[in-house]
Length: 341
Image (cartoon, rainbow, N blue to C red):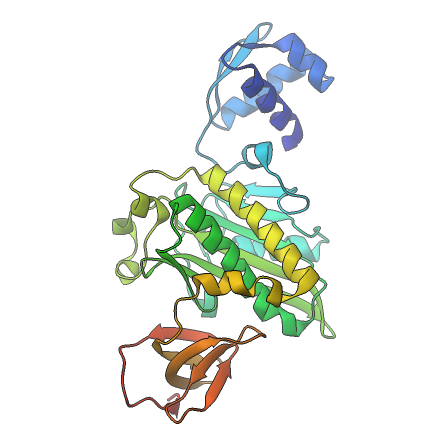
């Protein structure tokens, strides 16, 4: 069933709270019969909404389910193009794969896939992304940016900035939040979000970019698989309370749209200072497993204009790395570049 009638009914019920909204008024507002209103109410109840009332009488919304339904997110969403079309899954293998399939079928810029859980969630560099049900945010967005291939790395950094800003606002603190290049978002050094971008291109022209974002919101860190417990956290566990997943998703989509629009209009330079305010790796000793097979060790100098990580080598040479896996190390005087393997 299309989500628009459900959105209108929910909006009317919320506006009338705590007074019941009559079936007659709902019928007039939607331009459908009262029997059809009853069917919509029944559909909402099946989706987990607790609604008092009966056919022929008034209806009152008692409680909404903890679900990232399209009608919930779009109710107060202030965006122009992002998440105006939402596809929701109770469970799926991978939201990125779903969004990619939609993109190939012609899905519009901003089409958004959201899942309550993933059975094969994907992270960067082929890693799995742990995706338990009804606790976090797993979303993928179809983008059709008018950008060159060379500009995509900074678009990825901009997405990381949007997540960091949303986490910071929710946490009501920017000091504890940082971006680990290129786009992992950390709270007190522990990962709370990962981002993956996958491209479809023809003759150096980008046909679509699938932006996948996973944010740990309410999972108890004790529930993480053993290999993640020392390195990951959730926003809710850091705050000591449950995060409203709908409000978080709405705010993320609003900030993400603003930053993507600014990036596409004026380039990375327009958001670079914001990114650098969350980039706290400068001056730290690191090891980078680069995609070309090299392990590069050095000291972080900063972020280049093209989004590359600037690494100062022991002899003073600066090497730029556009993609790779970063490990922050203890300071050492014996930094070197070696061939992997």
